Every structure is written in C-alpha cells, then in structure tokens.
Image 1 (cartoon, rainbow, N blue to C red):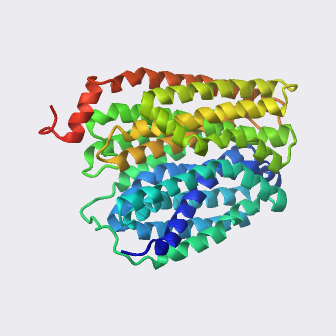
Image 2: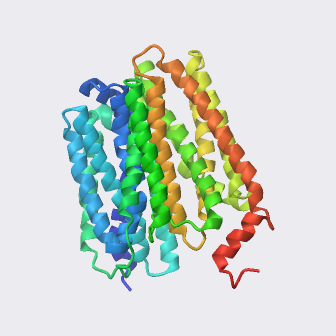
Image 3: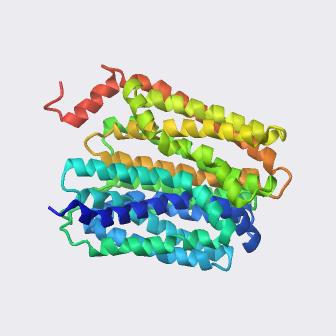
Length: 471
C-alpha cells in the first residue's frame, strides 16, 4: 500500500482540476462588462462567452466518462488538462470576441474530459473505503467552494489586472496539477475494450444543444434563421434518443423502472440551473452596468447567493434523511422562489438598498443550497446499483439547464446599456420564481412515490435486487 502522504499531490491535483472546471462556470460573469467594453461584444456575444464553455461541457460529460472506462481515466484527464490549459492561454490572449468564444469552446471540451475522470482516479487510487470516503468528501467540498469563489475571485482579478487575468489564473494551476497525474504509475482499473463508446449519440447530443442555444441567441436578429436552427436541434435530439434505443452501449442505459424518477429528478435539476445561472448572468451586469459598482464590489455582493451552496450540504443531507429527497427538494425550490421574488422587488425599487438585495440573495441561495444536494440524492436513489449513470444524467441535465438559462435570459433582457435592461431582468427573476414553484410542485407531487409500498418503490427494489431476490 502506498503511504497516505504520497497520494496527497495526486488528490490535490485532481481536486484542483475539478475546482477549475466549476470555477469557470461563474468566474467569467464578473468580467463580462469589461469584456463587452473592450471587445465590443453585445449581449449575444457575452452570452456566447459563457455558453461556448457550457455547451461542450454539458454535451460531452457522458461520452467522456465512457471514453475513460475504455482507454483509462488517466489518459483522458491528462488530455483534458492539457486542452484546458492551452485554451485558457488562448482566452487570455484573444483579440476579438470570436477568438474568445472559440477558445472558450475548446476550454469546455477540456473541462468535459477532466470532470468525470478526476473522481474516478481518486477512487481508483484510494486503498480502502475509509480513504475513499475521506477524499470524496474533500473533492466535493472543494467543488462546492468553487461557485461562491467565482464571483469574488473574478472581481479581484478584473479590478486588479483586467478581464484577461481571469483566464491566466488557470494556467499555473493546471500546469502544476499535470505533474502528479503524469507521474501516476499505479495500475489502473482494468480497461474494457469490449465497451463501446456511442460516438454518434455524443455528436447528436452536442449538435442538438449547440443549435438550440444558437437559435435562442439569434432569435432577435433573424427569426427565420432561429426557426431553422431550432428544427435542426429538434432533429438532432430525436436522432439522439433513437440512437440510444438502438446501440448496444448507449450513453444513458437507464433501466425502465428508473426512467420516470430519474427523468423527473433531471428535469428539476435542469430547471434549477436554468434559473440560477441565468439569474447570476444578469445580476453581475446589473450591479456593474446599471448600479456602477466595481467588479470587486459586484462579486462580493453576489456572495450571499453562492455561500449557502457549500455550507448547507450537510444540513440538507440530514433533512433529506428525515423527510426524504423529494420533499426536501420541494422545500428548497419554495425558498428559492421566495428569494427570487425579493430580488425582483429590489431591482425595481431603487430605494430598497443593497442590504435588502443581499438578504434576498441569501434567501435565494439558501433555497439553492437545500435543493441542490436533495435533488442529486433523488437522482442517485433511482439507480442504486449504477450510481455513475444517475450522476452523469444529473450533471448533464444541470449543465444543459444552465446553458439554456444564460441564452434565454441574455436574449430576453437585451443589452445591459439599454433602458429596459433592469425592468426586464426583474421580470425574469419573477419568471424564475414561477419556475422554482413549478419545480417544487413536481418534487412534492412525486414525493408520494417514495412512500413504503408505492408502485415505484416496489419496481425500483425489484430492479436493484434482481428478479430472484425481490418479493
């Protein structure tokens, strides 16, 4: 057995990669006003600066996990880190919006290659269950800290050195993280050459998401082009589902009894990120372009919304154990809806002040902090014998929801320098409250399915124990 100390550099390196993947979801938001001013990027361009990263991240997560199972996760993680690092340099040096968007897309590909493999390598190189539980807790805590760190770190970097510093930050961290992974020589889990990667399904999924996001962003410029792109996206999505049913190794081999609960859990997770990332996209621009706050002040003011996510993980877990994942999800969604209504009020009432905004952001973040672990637990419970499947579906749904949220909110709110930006944003926060209420209703209505003796509970028990063990 390798001494525990010798595993620390590898664990730190893999957690650093995971941290950067999630950090880049939020750290760029604070830099958007300065990027827009220096590169002359409108609201559509700024939306693509964020979504060009999120689209490949959402579309390739399932495929990258399958690739790692076939060729070894070490190779995939190394490729992802190298891709992420080179793309970060390209982002930092980008002379135009188009170059920045292209580099962000490559960065998203690298993030998708890294994310599943970081946890897989940590588990493969942990000697026993106790060590695995400990390092998984560290991995999850570091990931949870990335979201609240994003706006603050972004604000500090933009104010001190400009928007390009946001991307330079990743370069030394990735460079140092590469070293322990390259030195890793311990035997990996046996590869599965018989396992096939559903390349067609992966391409169709990315195509559907890319064309759908483009259609949403382009709708104000050309409704005809947007309609054509939406049709292509719909065809690609239908092709993805058709392919999943035909191939021997689909990206999401969901057992029949788990399809409904996993689908509903993924839907709630997608709606959650749709509202959360779409709202954060608007909020950072409102604070800087409308209220004229500095990047650091804007990032700090969003902290109440982000801090509850890592802090409420353990309490939400205990609440989930007591009243169930679906009821906890419904509670979290209801709290988030109340916070969104309060945020909308402060955006339309100039006399409310930043203290009121901070309070309602904290309420919003508390709802997200309760909802996030609960709905993930609900998804994981649908396929207890194959947790990777539920995790992949949940992560893909969340990333997809966030990507679409940014595109929709950017399109409906318009340019940040327009007179209607603040009232449009307030209306969108009211819309998020309605969506959270809908998600809460879905979760509460389905909570009865987990009652002892319910049909869904019996079906899942039969599926997880096998036909000969089930009663």
